[in-house]
Image (cartoon, rainbow, N blue to C red; front, top):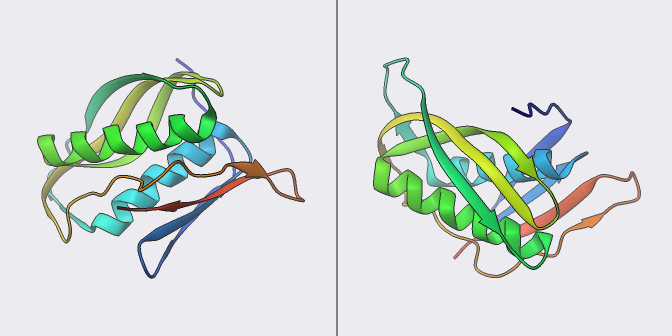
Amino acid sequence: MLYLSSMKEFQVVDGGSIRVRATTRAGLVTAALQGLMADAGPRTSELDVKSERSFALSAADFGTLLKDFLAAAAKSAAANKEAYEDVRFTLITDKKAEGAFVGRPAEGFRTPPREAKSRPEVARNEHNEWETTVTLA
């Protein structure tokens, strides 16, 4: 297993967008997931039960991979009534991501988890950090 630790942050912006920044691609994807869940506003169970849901995705580029990752997370969260807090990667490259969404049971969501509206542009900033803004559908 590959466990990654990096500086990562997200900001949910009014109007349905998430600004994300991290030092690694894995951190960027994890922060985007955390922003997606924050936007949905899960009501989590009091039980200290962890869940993991596997995923394996591939795409032509990293922006498309991020969009597909968020779509898979939103669908899985809604279908399984789970709020994801983290990602355990076994592989992440610019075109592939494999691992598991890590979370816990959710009694419901303020709003259903939303997918990315379009492929986000992902680039490095002047501090050599990965950053993007994801517009949610």
